[in-house]
Length: 279
Length: 279
Image (cartoon, rainbow over all chains, first blue to last red; front, side, top):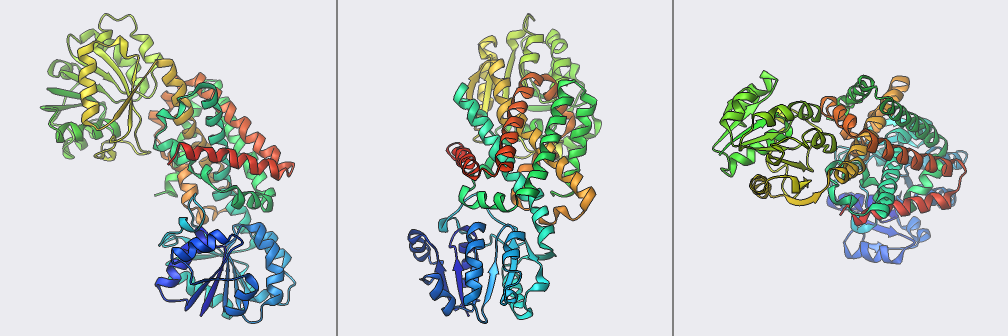
């Protein structure tokens, strides 16, 4: 089958590598508003051909959407108007808004909403890597609204990518990602800004930066083009978790200001329970 | 020469591996208030012998302090009373308070205050690993207060550990570590607590946790025995950076609440400047 990848960046490009390797795709067609990305993706051998979206829809059985979520929101309804029996895979990082706008579309069943919980802080076709998805979780969202044959094709691709799978509603997905992905990006952005400000005043501040700092700040390298629309679409959930996180930090601050080191010890001890989750 | 390692955990144990490998130490003597740690360190071949501190001081030319900073603060003055020509290396993560209490000690010159900017979120002798320090920075603090021969011995050890070196005052050191190490731990503790709370209310929350979440939260596995004393001794600097960080997060919150996505985009873009620091 021919597969169109709309957005040949980190996610689209990394999937393309496996689709080729496992010979799932006869032909991979790249769609990207950036001519430079298409050129790079061709050079890197990620895609076989570049095409405008309209032509790619005609030429392919599967259309994979790996563009930022504002672009998915804009192009999905019009894309569904053109679809007959093709499968459209929405791989966006937010789901509620996107699935709302196509809820009553006659071709809704051709869409499979899936979110691969994998990525790096880099973007663009040159960021694509093999095995980005192996062992990671693919979340199927509102899967009961997808046609069975469409779902089966996506599930086969997830299997070939060596992914584990789980099922959720769109609302659940957006709440959960606010807690275990979106907030992590905000803390990294804010931490980077805090320390960059200090450097301006004081210089030399990064000389001592070690692996702990790098670990908590590396997500601050993430693309604003990808992330601003995510926060726009998941605004309410993110505001809630961000407020809770600020409250936690304020509590740590108060405990330290009051020199209540027993309470401070217990806070760290309690946070150590994360060991149960992170092996 | 014989080297005593006081505190045979992650840092002490990892240094011991190199001291043996490079044949810098004729004998490595372990000192630890935990008998279990001494036993494990012997089993793992990190040390040749366990001894009480008093005996180790007699038997060794170099005494390396890799215990938590509250223990360093407590034992250092008494240890200096016993020292004649030995070298004492203070490897603690805070410096101002520790160096204050020995400022007027007649043997002050035998102490070299050094802080290896390396570590992991694990602790204990079984956490010791080879090459933990290679390529990392060793900070020499108030080096002008150390005797030249004492400093030279420590610098030779740092060279054998393949470390880069830099020099700072105690005050500078404590401010800088608050910004590029201590605050990272607090954001991890608070983020872990935020998400663990949510799990209590909602369950399943960690199913989607990927590498981004892990990266920002892994420091929450850190030992409260090591970290509570660090925050106690560096309280004022940490309170300052924590307040700045909370202000940054509150600003991100306000911008998102007001749906000012241009400002949000610019915040991310600005935080991207961290790419200059993190390769």
